[in-house]
Length: 334
Ligand code: SAM
Ligand code: SF4
Image (cartoon, rainbow, N blue to C red; front, side, top):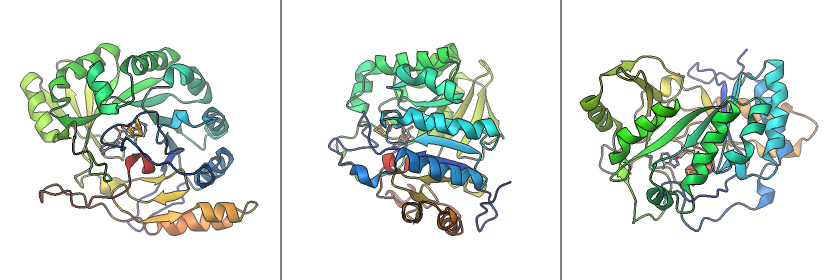
């Protein structure tokens, strides 16, 4: 039974947890090249992450998505996944999943499956090795492709998350769609969001509207808009010729706020109530100050949820990135 109901009668049943702010890539739209990371003592320990998530699950959270930074570079992270298995076994948790850049999947795919993970989102913006190195700065495409193979071999359903960047992967629209179809991989395109001051005057790509992409799709496919929704920002279309379902995440529109069922926790225990708003609650203090008593933590969670805003304020239409939030995606976990 959901116990976390916000002021707009939305039940919060989905928690995204960033387990680290660190990453082995430096994607240009996400991080600057010389990022300063948090000192270790600021981070929730793996045991604290367990206690946090367990408390949320006790309050009716049914879906956990582990993210970052890059979640699979956090030392010992598999023990955290393993410890969450008990909530899947008890039936309290319906889904344990993660969003990853794929670099460590070759190593961890089997262990993730054994822990009860069945689906994984892999972020990949291009299938061109040179462009991949450029957009991620530090990443290597073959390693990620081996990770995707390993995930599929382990039995994980893979979804690609691809950030739409004009002048960068626009030319790969059909290549990426065909590649996913050939491998039975799901695909969601994400509009780039105005996040942080990344100092990317040398921006590799720029805003490419998904509306424009739909128009391009219609030139080759019969595109049917689907009405289904996952309670999240994705909207789907079906390409009738291939049967493929393609997702679009347009965070800059408000069309999903009314069904929003999620909150995000950072690796330091801040609870962000909306991706596009600065308002947050601190959960680390009640957790650390009361090691034996979950009451104050539960009270802090409930208080924060009572402040969940109706929606966000991103707006590109005024020719500037209005509603821009200063924190990086690697902080809130996207
Ligand atoms: N490192 C993991 C990864 O890349 O999948 C998980 C964390 S990453 C912050 C989560 C998602 O946020 C990725 O799919 C990434 O492409 C997306 N992202 C990062 N910065 C973004 C931005 N400015 N606009 C849109 N999506 C962004
Ligand atoms: Fe790392 Fe993911 Fe951000 Fe890229 S998008 S820098 S992989 S956290």
